[in-house]
Length: 331
Ligand code: ATP
Ligand code: MG
Ligand code: FE
Image (cartoon, rainbow, N blue to C red; front, side, top):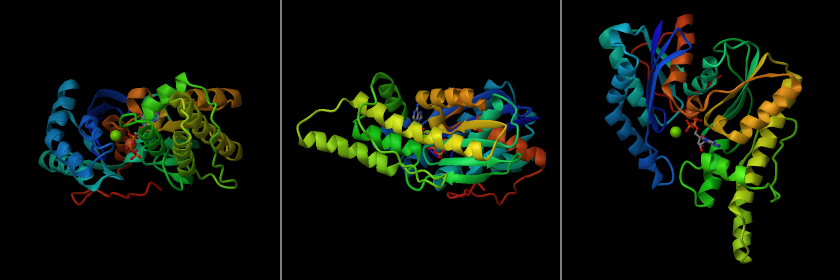
């Protein structure tokens, strides 16, 4: 079975072809970062226009790189939420057009389900499992008893982890998106600056806006006193605080609700410090940890096709009324 995946929820235009659920034949990703950089973040109108200009070219390229044509495709999987509505609509419209014109079944995929299923390209999933989702817009502990069943046990009450990384990076004058730059700096520095950890005891929820503000205050106060702060040490301190809370709460939950696997998902899964800290802790506690390869951490259509494959097998097909849903819930 071959699935064509389409992803346009934010600022990546992506199309992919996967075979039998876990073999990637192609995964073409066109990033718009250069267009959004000068604004310091994603501008929705600009994103939509780029998607419109690129979508057919990217789909053609994905088929070409897979050495296939639409005749070889069994189903089309498309992200229909959450995300920017104008951006989502471009992918959904393209998927519906191909589905209608060629009589190919259509599957609607939740973007975060896609991030979680990126792990299935590494290894078959075993349930129950826990997914730590850390991305630009989400920070969630998702418990799954079976394919396609998502229970959100904890989530951020304010900023997502990726959002906090990008804002901290911006305050240090680093380019957008700042996550990878902070990761690199943190690697070079020492966590010598005291910063808070929001534990939100008694819950599995997270909060990162206080930490972000503490970083901004540290910079501001130092500037007022005419002192200088080493950006690398601030980055290392920030990253240490984030990772300590994420890893600790994840394993507290696993101790309460044992799982067969722990999955890491979302753009921040690319973070070197987080990957290492989770790996060490999982090894120590005897928990099987799956982490996607770097190429499948940030937004891509292969992960959407991967989640779509499961829905397709279940017979969960979408109709021509499928629409983009900006605030689509996972559970
Ligand atoms: P969502 O998936 O919640 O809808 P999104 O699709 O915009 O949001 P992703 O593409 O999943 O976000 O992830 C992008 C985020 O990941 C950005 O905030 C980026 O800074 C962050 N990121 C990428 N690499 C790293 C890294 N090495 N360390 C920390 N953050 C990173
Ligand atoms: Mg993006
Ligand atoms: Fe994403």
